[in-house]
Length: 252
Ligand code: ZN
Image (cartoon, helix red, strand yellow):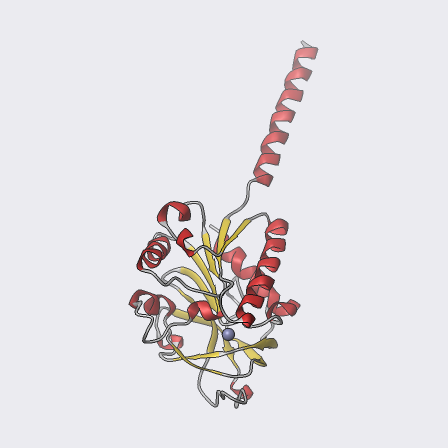
């Protein structure tokens, strides 16, 4: 009897260990990051750094980080495998990819967009995206420069580890018209400090309220204007934002 009991106890223990291990090993969520290598060098450099950063983070935090340059992967069937889509340095250009993305977001998917992935102007002709992002590109500084940023909201999971202000590494900063802050569904999390003005030399940002990081509360999404050049991911404090953003977007 004792022998049988011991045997049962061992079996239960083995099963429990197996369950715990398989639970620990199954990824928390899956990210599909899309990018391209055929755009300006500074945007390709950023893609390389972002992929390196998130690949390392995915291993540490137990999520899947798949990357592709094939934008046709924005299709219903493929997107069923993912909880988060990331656009690193590009956006979809054809109707099929745009429709698949809209469907993914409307059905509760999550999105993280960097820098030029939020670019849209009068030629883009994608009204759904303008409503989703809450902004249209207006102006930019040139050359790329570091800038002081104000963290508007430290209560959001993506910004909770950021200081109230900090100097962000070199980036090309975009201004927006309409201003996302004027959209009732948009929550601005980080803003360019007006103390930076005039920002630039060839192209100057001289004035204006310029949100840098925001979320549209109708969706699970974050847009961040960082993403130009090979310095963006070099600052530990700002990297907390990149880390916490993806963990929030991947959370249930
Ligand atoms: Zn740029």
